[in-house]
Length: 618
Image: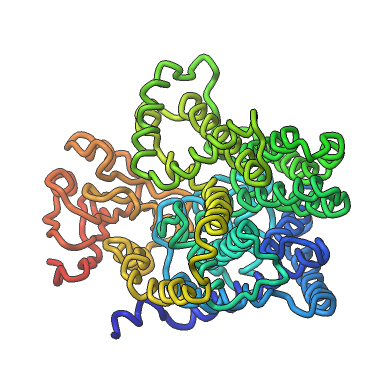
């Protein structure tokens, strides 16, 4: 029992993280609810608020040199006023369904708050970027260069901005904010997916009572039943969940907008266009690839609008500037800042190679490997291929709202995967291109669109084949039991941050006593290099060079690496090999990490840390 409880509870920092994120989420939802009026898709309130905040902070950071903290106080005051306004207008800040879903998801939220960062990209960009904003109070720029832990300063800062705001609320850097925000984003979209399913099943919103069973189903829709849910992405500081949720809400809002146009509700369509615009502003400001997702989702909405005979093309086109302008302005501001302030910064962002170097000859091999990955992740790709197939049919024989949704989802899927093929040809090296590195993770960006399409399709199937045979209330206990049992059953798997050797790497880095100016290196012939990335992040250093398993670890390579070290260098040896022992001239036992330095030309061990369960080091 004690071991099980340790998965869920981790002391004071966990409580601080949960309180800070709750305050941040309420503030974003209040700003979004105030900005979008009564008639809105309420599940996306936090996204609308995030869109407003992204526009404000990016404009402030690019066009002025004033610190962010000044604007942060203004935003906090506006959030308080917005909360009061929405409560007075609507009688509540969150729907009863959202409150119930959050209560049911509390075990998962506790797990997320109890965890520590453990994944490569958390340490190499997302966490350093949030901390950079909090420490410097400014965007990275020519007069505010990155001097701490390495990151990609030209990446959009929409996601690190939430980490910054969490830090301002908590008065300290809140490392776990991203994990909790990811869970809340998934639950929010799960609620929207269930709403879509109910609509397809013919359940009018005003006649639906959101009991605990439906709320549990919403939690499952965002997590366990989500075909792209992966704990090592969702329960991290990665921005992929935020990207997927923004793209998903964009698709759903575009679909609702077209429904309003088809019903002749011009005012409703304009409101949906504004909501779509704020969500798209978030999308382009989360990751580099957000612009592409904005294009393919918008293209899907446009194709559906032009194909639907009930939608006036002229009325839709009049809404396009409102739908697109905030995202384009935000993207333009950021690119202006990057080109003017980060010109010549090496490694600032991922770039395309010159056209002459594009590897067109690799296309057959890339496509083949894409198919292999698709076969392994068959549920998601099956859903999207069905959507694409129905979309193609709808181009010739349009059949109503389901075809409208299929056109949006199918167009986005085809367009995005065509883009992925392009970047493998134009940006990746041959080895990574032929193994389509991160192809599945990139497709996760369309995961919520897949959930939306599946939810609506299942609602239609329920209405047609099962509604007369099954009583929904009689089945409500099933999702409820699954939501309550899943965190307990899967807790060891969800707490991947406890998997060795990550906790050991972190403990060693936190226990180091290294002079600030002393050059630090890592030798880890049996590791991936994570030890060095974790150490660099925790010590907030711009560089901690390393050699790891994927490097050349021959005797000559290790000798060159060591001989090239700066004077007064110190080395963390996380795993020993014959070559390491020979070059350093030390008898380093297995099962421990060592800190060594040079004394009178000879290496010596300063400290050692045994791996858990390995006993004491020699």
